[in-house]
Length: 466
Image 1 (cartoon, helix red, strand yellow):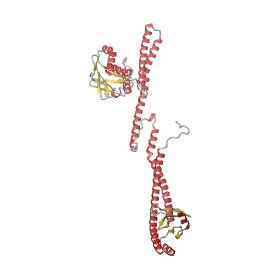
Image 2 (image 1 turned 90 degrees about the vertical axis):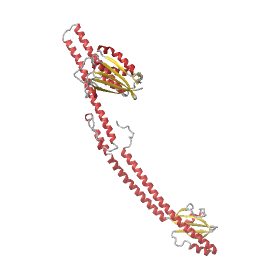
Image 3 (image 1 turned 45 degrees about the vertical axis):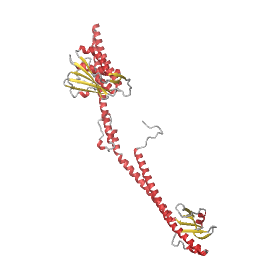
Image 4 (image 1 turned 180 degrees about the horizontal axis):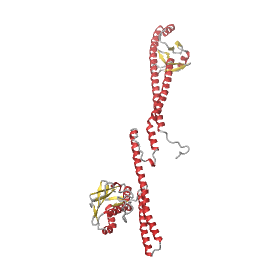
């Protein structure tokens, strides 16, 4: 079915995996680059702080020595040599009136630091960063012995190094991400190769090639359960298709026989003039064939309704013993005619209440008893047992008679199946009775089965208890 205009389908697995891997690796590299850059920046800040501590202490000592002399020349001399040997250090000292005592710093830096509130001592929180004329500085404004001091170090080299480092880290992160994306694409394509092979095999499976199966050994471990489930589905489809094909052929065969009989009898009747009694005989014979067709069509319609998974059964709480006794009453005349006894075996205290559709249950019980009566010799007894098995009620119909060969047992509940296709006794039906029993049981969530041996055959049906 074509997609609606403007409707976008879900993203492909390859795109999802590639996108997740790319974003994850890209984020990991970006965070790593940021952490490295931040760590190195913090290291440079610590080095600058240590340098400024030394400079601040030197200025403090120089101011103390200059105050002892109390001369401007002494101030300048001591402050000039206070930080000898410290390259890249800038400082300036101002008196309480804001007049410079000694400065060795660019005027623009001193102007930028003039508005800052002086701190009583150098600390990490008292440090400031200034950018003046394209140059960067890190320093502090301090109160030293009644004077105002500005100390700073140039961070141009640090900033240039960090800029180059960040550029290199981001370039590496982008390159590594691209490589990771390419590797993810190749890995996804290689990983999806078994799926493509499975898809190609599945495309070749048609109604003429339902025997084709996928080999779980050729699939990865993650896909083996899927392959096995798909093969199981194909087994069911093939079996259903074969049953449907056989069912169609069986329907054609079963319908052809009575229709052929009707046509033959009609043609014979029309071949020459007949007496009223002869015409009446032909009509009676045709009526029998039509009744057989009616029952066959009714059975097939019942099967279709019973096997419809969407139908909602009207269920009632039924006592299986009472329903069985009603079926016995219906077949009592037939049993007496054949000299066959009917017997129920059930413990009075045994729970036997089920939740079922009365009409369908009576149809299943009638088919089981009718099948047993047809195959039970004269003078024998049919025994029906009702037992409780965990959460289910089990009903067994046991009749003496000819043992059924083991190769026929799995097919007795198939539609139109007969042990001897050449035999078709009057009133035996079209071979749908046991198929109806199975359909009724499965519609109620139950199961059926058959056992045969030592001259006795047992058909059983197991239905969930209430």
